[in-house]
Length: 300
Image (tube, rainbow, N blue to C red; front, side):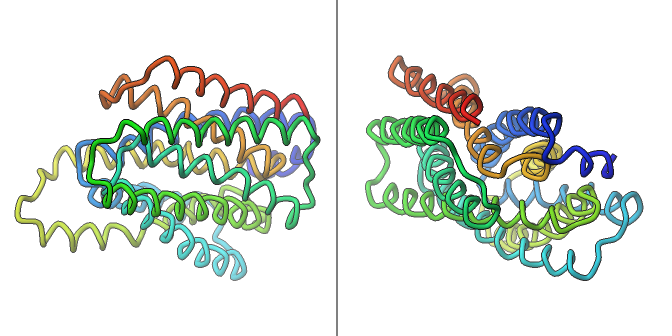
């Protein structure tokens, strides 16, 4: 399977599969974000997800795929540091602000940086139509965040802190997308990179969550938290794994932009599942985001 994926990279068939993987990743990532922001403490939710990511990924990494080379292992250690920064910023943002505010800010600021980075590191270039699509998508996402922000009733100081960490999260999204795309291209087998990526980068937050759990005066029940962790771990494989395979098969910038349609799905999740309001203006902005993704895809 890994050899076949490598063989179609850069071909029309690979580009079509990359598009499908990026869109699948968008749906999965919206669900993943909702799981971390749900009724549980975001630190505990992320810790439970990473615990199960490590548990489920370990046998795959150790017994089912080839072991990584020394170079790949060094790249994976770099990914551990970068993704820790991303997870830390997301936990701090979710701790202070609403999901429908934090998520669009993070996802809206990422594509512009990622497309620029892809042009430098991977020599990818967007057509004018594609740049118009990026502007439409990112603009729609950030306007959605501003719309949601105008309705927030929480403490302004806490909201500012949440927004700050959301912007840091957006920057780390661009960094890890570019870095992971480079990393998976250095591995002879993309599934080796993915399996070890999920195992190694999941070793940090369970420790933080355990320390936090021990200090909590009112500790949450572990049963529901573990269920959330298992579900989140499976979704993470589709979310992060899908977009990394997409960047291996096609253009990094296009995959990154298409993945940010996750904001549309996140708004729907916030509306139907988390009970957050979605009115006509948000629906218009969601349409704008989707239209931007279509322009990026058609303009390539």
